[in-house]
Image (cartoon, rainbow, N blue to C red; front, side, top):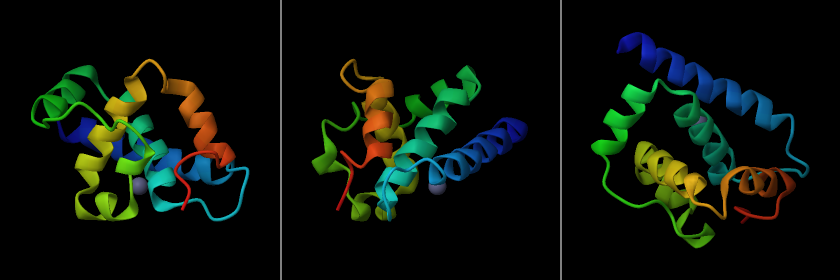
Length: 109
Ligand SMILES: [Zn+2]
C-alpha cells in the first residue's frame, strides 16, 4: 500500500512537471493544474488502490467547470481529485477535456 501511494504521488508530481511545459497560455489556474495532476494520478494508480479510494469517496463527479473552483480545491484537495477523475471518465470529457485545459478553453478564471 505505501509503495502504491508513493507511486501515485510521484505520478501526480510528474504530471505537474509535464503539463506545466504544455499549457498554451500563461498563468493556468490552480484547478486546471490540479485536474491534470489528479487525473494522471488516478489513471496510473494500481486498480485495487484506486477502487478502494473511490469506494470511500461518495459522489458522481463534477458536472461542469462551475463546480471546480479554487476554493473547492483548497478546501479538500483529495475530494477535488476524486470528483475531477470521475468528471474525466464521463463520455463527453476524457482526453478532449485535457486538451481543452491545456489550451485554456476551460478551467480559467
Ligand atoms: Zn498537485
